[in-house]
Length: 113
Image (cartoon, rainbow, N blue to C red; front, side, top):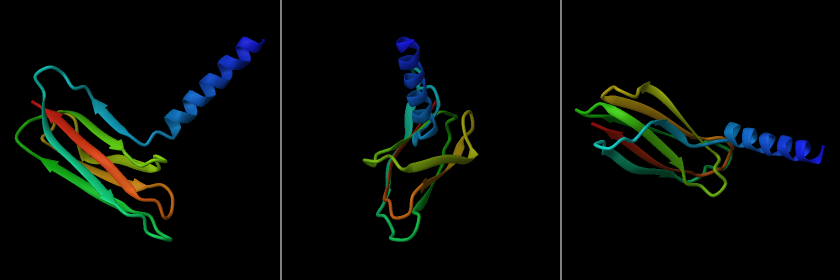
């Protein structure tokens, strides 16, 4: 019974981690892919408000992977793809904080071939 309880707790923590995940990871970086875009997008927190930034990329290569890593200590950001995406030549990303007053700090990497 104790093993079952421990397993349930581990699964619950893992699911909570997935729900609270703040990174956006799409596609796979394969041999032959090159980094098309790498940029840190950061903004200080606003007292009483949310912070948001847009990242727009367009190029001549097809996108094979998109990575947006939340670099804040408490990982309170959200990253969403709002246009374009994998196997296209452009992507629009929306980055936003989830809680009022928190700062935004993302590393965005786009790979393609």
